[in-house]
Image (tube, rainbow, N blue to C red; front, side, top):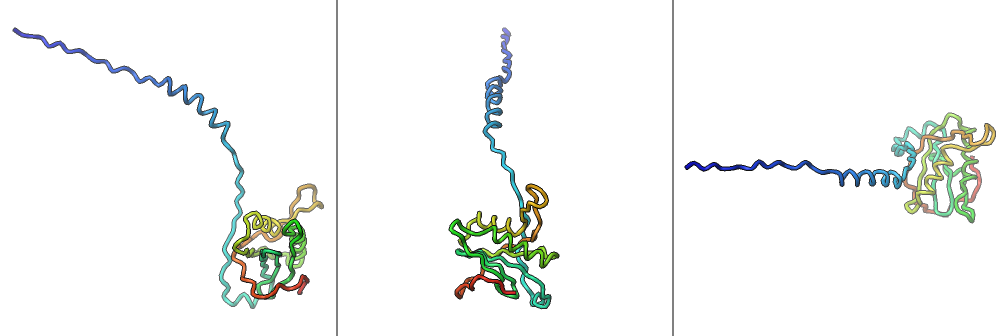
Length: 173
C-alpha cells in the first residue's frame, strides 16, 4: 500500500508593523518639540607663535592683554605695561578696556593682532568678554547696534606669573 504523506503547506504570516508605526507617529512630534535648537558662534583663534628675536627689531605694537585676578593689564610685549585697568565692585571693567582698545586702534590702525593671556583660574565667561572687548567696539555713531572692528586676530595663551607688585595705573608711552 502506498501511503500518501500529506504535507501541510505553512503560510508565513505577514509582518504586522502597525504598533511600531503608531509609536513613531507619536514619538517623532514629541522629539521635535522637545529639541533645543542652539546657535553656535565660532571664533577662529590661533596660538601665539614663538618669537625668534627678530620681533624686537620691528618696533611696532605687539599687544597683549593679561587677565589677572584683580585687574586687566594692557601691555606691549617689548615695551612693557601700558595701562592697568583695576576691577570695579562689579568685576572686570570691560567698558574701560574697550575704550582703551579704541584709543590704541586709532594710534595703530593697521594692527589687527592681539594676544590674550589668562591666569589658570580665569573663568570662560571673563575670557569671552575680554575677547569681545578686544575684537569689536559698539558705537552709536553709525546707528544702533553698529560695531567697529578693533583687533580681530586674537591669540590665547597663559599669563606670565606675576613676580613683583603690580605697577600703578597709568600710561607709559
